[in-house]
Image (cartoon, rainbow, N blue to C red; front, side):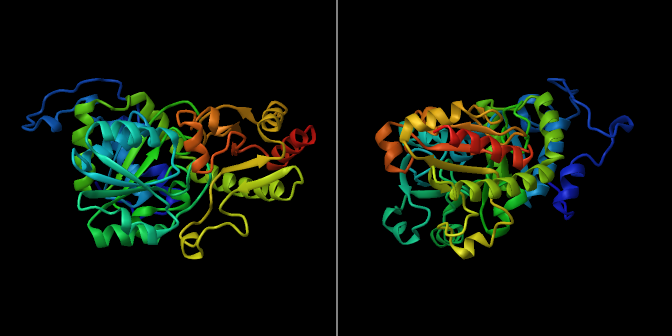
Length: 385
């Protein structure tokens, strides 16, 4: 897939849509499940929605590859479809995976339950402690998986060491870049093999579709595509259209969310009713300076603990007037949730506690509202405790 050398602000608008169909400035929705046969000899070359090769799919693939600096990209029916298909394109029975210990709950459920049921073994690693990884390496290890910014503790591991470790040991390096987005961090430029996204979140940015993406080298993405067409996790063309539209404002949205989240994190860190704040852009965060230098911003996500435990957390959330209590993240509206009841509710309480997710932890996804109004809302909520 042709890669664009244009700046990201231009690529989000134009990449993938250079060819105007019937003069339309915006790529139309090709809501057709099947297309005329034109002599293709390979099944995967037929035009068909499930094969993820309609004009809407192809335009998105070109755009996402340009944004992440990859050779190729494909979209999927959800972020979990992207993660599961990518893992299953690399791993099979008898193989072994190393994965970050604190990840999105759906990812953790997948690698803890479904992969072992398929004969794939998994070990969890601390992404900030590279000296501990070697002891978990096996001859059967095939891949290492991390998140650029972890969900929900906003940790950034030693990403430089992840790439070096993978290279030395012949592993495929995989990274979920949902929280950072290519606006803040482009993993392929720093040696990662595959980048994964839940496009449901920041890439779409409007809380109205579910989608995923895989970006990387042509050969690896092609392997994922072959697995995807057999498992059927294809994205509908109308959802492709909405995702393409959402991507056009990605840079504007994320840069404002970066700035607002940083201001909110500083406000919370100084508030007497706040016990702790997790945000990698705060002074004194545990992010290695070399790794932090890879990022141009730290995203719109933060998590924190209020004094008084679970009951105070509930009262605080109930008292908010702008932030909406709901799962998911990355939209234009500010959302608040307790991961123990939403994204990580599938984990036993002991497992959550072991990786630092308490029942009282609050996760805030900052939207594009006026930051002054958001801080006022948080302040009045805290004032009621």
